[in-house]
Length: 127
Image 1: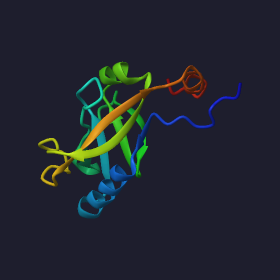
Image 2 (image 1 turned 60 degrees about the vertical axis):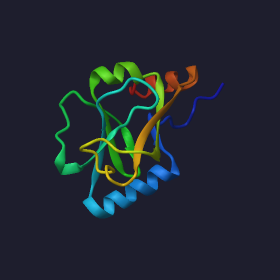
Image 3 (image 1 turned 90 degrees about the horizontal axis):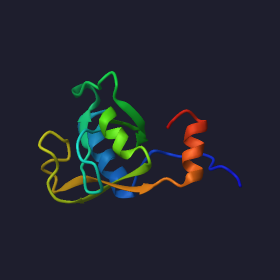
């Protein structure tokens, strides 16, 4: 059985990529932080990179559309068995999230990693 070549902990849909690019044009380099919520339907917060201090223990899951994506260590314990899929839906963004006021918000969906993907993440030192 072959191992997955690359397992991403966080990915984005095409609509999320497009919104990230629009926000980058307006605000410069961005970052995401998932600080609350334990399940599908949570909303990550989008900030200017120089407008949010990442904690020393925060976990970097990866990047979406060139923007680093972080999570608090306690949140990571809830989510570590899942791949996060960042999407965009109609609604109101978080009060301090950059998409607020645009009529849409980022939304976290997830799927469980397969046993093979978890094994690959462990081999890579990313689990």
